[in-house]
Image (cartoon, rainbow, N blue to C red; front, side, top):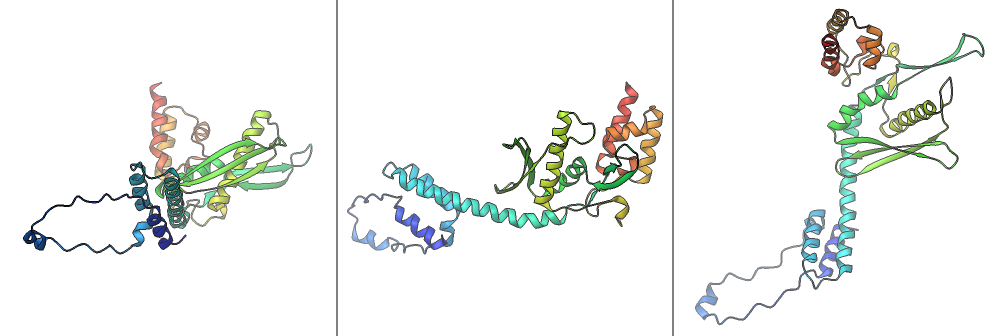
Length: 284
């Protein structure tokens, strides 16, 4: 519906019921001093925006002579315009956000070995969900986006994972993937569900955001995402290593606690958290 059509529809609703002004006996001399009658204001496109319609709804709601059907027509127009504004805001913010998404390190690895043997016949690198989530969240927040998930079970028992990308103006996009439970290896039933959900989160998030991941050795930025997540410096690695030694903390276990493969992978933003965690061990 065009802006003029919106304005015409609002006019047709006749949301005001003017009351005739009382007649006054005004002397001729006073009549001559009165300001000339105002001309009708030209119709503007602003009359069709969400704010104008919301004002019309409030005015109509306070008028007992306006029937509910006319108010509902106004509400329908308001919802349509507001949804259009929200989608425009989403589409304007999305490319700016997407341009700042970092390249994610592929820290995960799946190995397929010969049956009953130790020889690896296939090895695949992938980006872990926890690494993806940690890398994208600051960028999403900076541009007014949020990523959430809905979980469900399909009729055939498979796992449904739905990713929902929402913008703070109200528009959202979503996508769903259905996967069989990942029972590979020695996983129990609970671990199989958890692994499948993690798979679903990775795939649906990538489908919505189209971010890139790459093996560390294939990158030309020393494993750091340009414009994205920066890792700690060599000096900071030494600080943490010395601190870990002073409190007799096992470096490998500490890396597992911080969810990194090695200290040099620790995001710079988490350096202080790592120091605090080690210093807390000193006080125990």
